[in-house]
Length: 104
Image 1 (cartoon, one colour):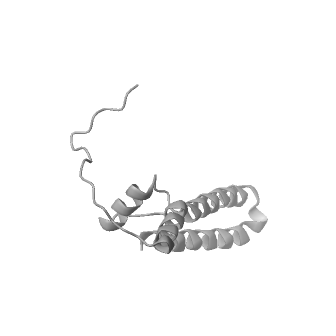
Image 2 (cartoon, rainbow, N blue to C red):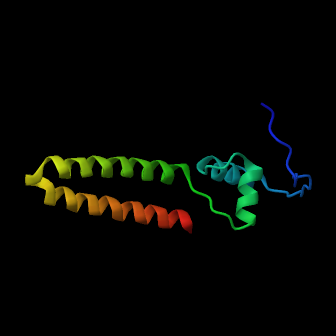
């Protein structure tokens, strides 16, 4: 199925010159982000849109998975439930910190 035509196509380009080291730094930043390419990355940065790094997104997903396992452990093991609740609170704090870094 063909992609529908945009009502506001991106047909204006801007020439920006970089040094070789700046271009390498830009490439590394794009690779670390979840952007589709350099244009997407520069568009987001210049327009003040949010960029979430792949590492943060993966870490948040893993922490959420661990949080789900802890919730399951709380319901199945009443003797250790207080310990699991303390761990779950720590996991939630870590997720909050990572999400806050992503919003900066």
